[in-house]
Image 1 (tube, rainbow, N blue to C red):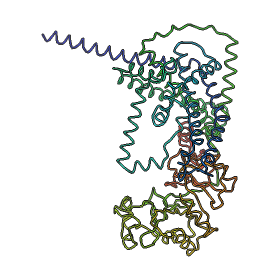
Image 2 (cartoon, one colour; image 1 turned 30 degrees about the vertical axis):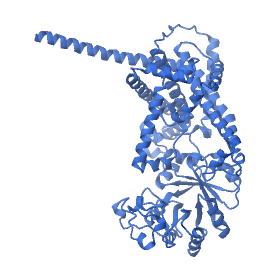
Image 3 (cartoon, one colour; image 1 turned 90 degrees about the vertical axis):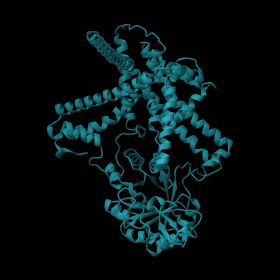
Image 4 (spheres, one colour; image 1 turned 45 degrees about the vertical axis):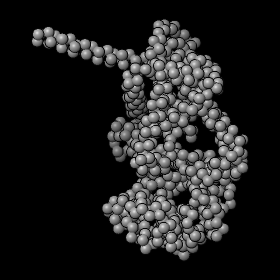
Length: 626
């Protein structure tokens, strides 16, 4: 009996091992298939992507910007900001133009996804595809999306922007939720959980449609038919497909990391071979920076086509489609010459494109005129909107501090962002219901750290005193509807302190700024807006604009500068947003973290990957230049 059980156990273990080996072999075979499909027509892929991106950069994006610039006039406004953006929806012409812009942008994004699906399918079929053939078929398939029964696929784009499926398109990856919204949600546990729940639901919906994209593009199915087919193919295999999909993505990332390391090694070897030892590190850093942006564009292209290929492979496998047998193609010198020519042209286009603004992470000469503004007096290293925060920002080398001013019930002007003291002091009290005798007893520091337990909510006069001759101030007026003569009182206190040349008045209300300019023309005014659409930035009572970073562009900055207006951008607390502001040549960078912003803009150590690579291949720190 024991012998039978032992034999049965051994047989079970053997069967388990065989299943494990089979799973590993299947995974290995699947990865080989996917990479084979991705690389089969790689020169066609790169050439297509360069034409696609150059078309967008040279023609489509300027055209879209022109159409967007027409929105204010169609809505009967000189500009569109958060105060009047809803005016668009009161004018049919403006609504139609907005829909046309959104549809055009969606069509452009889907054009790339369609091309990548078609490209992957050609690889699955083991056929060669030319650039012209891929473009022709993509145009035909893309135009079919405007059928009423296929048009709902455009509704998936907003969902894709907030999910990992954004990786299927180079331009979807550029979308980001504004930092101030993320920070607001992170500060509220309920909102954070709601946000996480929404993101999970979006991923579930898109996962159910995972195989719908190939179904819609490769066949003549409607959107609903493709959704049903995707659900049918996923039935009973959801977990298996999810695990395989995640494993493929991880393996691809490891492969790209290894390829990047190998490329850096080849560069380092070339530098050692052709340059004297004293120049090794500096030459390596120079060429690393030049090729880094090229690598990022090429890697992004292959990541997008890799994900599309995985979808196509899964689609065919779970439909039990039989892949055509491999046929060895005959080598042709003419074919090789043509392919080499187009490859060289593509590489040259890639090098040029990598130096344009649209290339996102490329190296750029850092503008020297951008000043650093401490948001809420500097909210990272001390309690926000306090004298302690202001002093820390002065110590950190900030050029300016942005502070928020509100009026208490007794008329005292205090520095406070929220309309209630709950978040910063723990006391549930509205600003307009409080007097200074009560407010000066509130603890504005312990919520940040016990080290600041004696920190109080400052008055505007106290902040002016701390800032005088030390730092400029951007004073944002917070209107609650309960204040009286907020603008006049603020200006009077600035003049009493003799700081007219050291202060700016900022607000999200144009009426308050107009009043400020009428009362004190010598004091600069700044309009704060989440977005700003206009063909003219020439309002005579404004000296500057402060724009949320997501809405910022080099074009906006250039146009404002042309009309002698300054541009500030807020609130940048990440490497990506800081670099975007610097690339856009904005006049001011508003951040909670002054040391981080100065570090990113500095010449020493600002590129982490570069320094790590240089330290690995050339470990002499004394030779570091960048």
